[in-house]
Image 1 (spheres, helix red, strand yellow):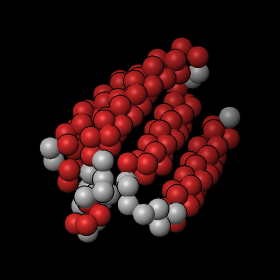
Image 2 (spheres, helix red, strand yellow; image 1 turned 180 degrees about the horizontal axis):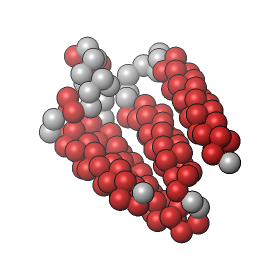
Image 3 (spheres, helix red, strand yellow; image 1 turned 90 degrees about the vertical axis):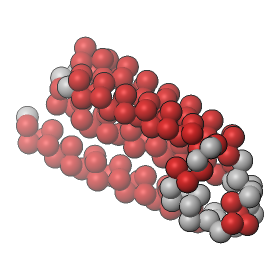
Image 4 (tube, one colour; image 1 turned 180 degrees about the vertical axis):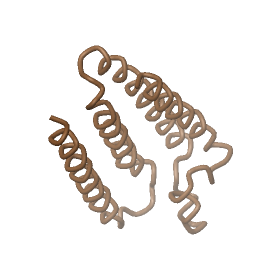
Length: 139
């Protein structure tokens, strides 16, 4: 399982370095930038945004790698997938929520934050139910 944790962490760190290229290639921020009209694209702070996303994913990758080693020492491998998945989803949601501060357009899209929080809660509950059921059955 440590190999899987290392792989996931290294892929996340690689995603961070790719996000650092958003200054030169802003369409790498697919879905966020590429769907905006041209007048809204002018109000995005790409230097700050790409630096933040780069740091965020690199830190998340390091946390996942360190967490893999800690879980190997402390816990059995039963809970490894659950904790790594939860850490990955939580870190990604935090990054998604913080990205909005680099968008200097009018703050008319407060529904985005509600969507992200709702998505986070639903995904967390589903993960807890699935892995809780697996843990209950395995005992």
